[in-house]
Amino acid sequence: MKDKKNILIIGGTGFLGFHLCNFFKKKKWNVFSLSQKPPVKYRKVKKINYLFGDISKIKKINFLKKLNIDYIVNCGGYVDHNNKVKTYNTHVKGCKNLYKIFSKKNINTFVQLGSASEYGSMPSPQTEDKEGKPKDSYGLCKIKATNFFKNLNIYFPYIILRPYQVYGPKQDNNRIIPFIINSCLENKKFPCSDGNQFRDFLYVDDFVTALYKAIDNKNCYGKIFNIGYGKPIKIKEVIKKINKKINSGYPDYGKILMRKHEQKKLFPSIKKASTILKWFPKVNFEQGLNKTIKYYKNFKRKMI
Image (tube, rainbow, N blue to C red; front, side, top):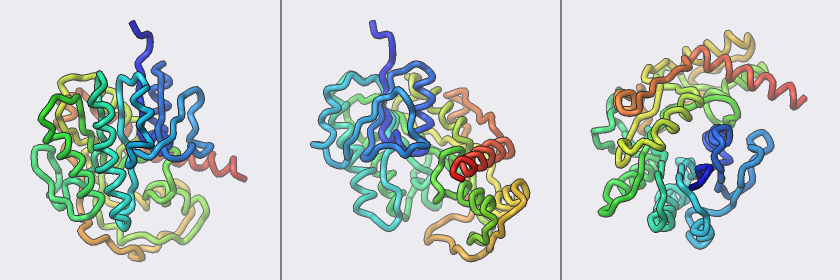
């Protein structure tokens, strides 16, 4: 009988991947991370196994067949609305390659991270029982990966989680929350939209808890779950809150235009996750912002 569970995090050097690796290490699981490059210093988790390979090229990841893995979480993939080929290769081709490897092994669970982008222009609150019609390349690739699993004609223990705007410490600066925080900490004038969009923000610890509740729950197999806070907030309100808490920075409203096909209001129904997973977000937006701002303040002090 095995003493420890073995988990492989695809994209373990990214923002979500780091938090998942760190969480499962603390749970005393054997953690393997697969990525194309080593982690940056501030996202390196001690005493886990870092592996390297490109999931879009099956020859580069065939070595995974030799590993005794119980659980896989696929949070890898390229996010660039302009690079359609690379987006397809990592999110669709990569997903199929992982299936080719792990469908022949006796795994417990394969968790595929989908995206709110899969719903396209569906009105909010968005529900998992309705078929989305995404317009952008990222959403199209994500729903192709989802449909690949849904259309399998043999048993495979997959679960699909669709996270909304997850934020928290160690996120890249090209995401909205750290961009605003760092701009304010540097007392910069920074470009932003008109701020009239509504978005749903979930603190990263709550996302990790949701995944943990799903990963060993057989009632989740073959199902899709929205993972978000369930209560949208206006972007202008987000900017004002951060600006006030830090007391510096100058938002320049209207400088960033909405992307084509971008929705004004975007938030999920989390009823399904709450009912089946018995999961509810515990960190409200004020608490999450305070934790995140504290992290970036300390990070900047260390850089000086």
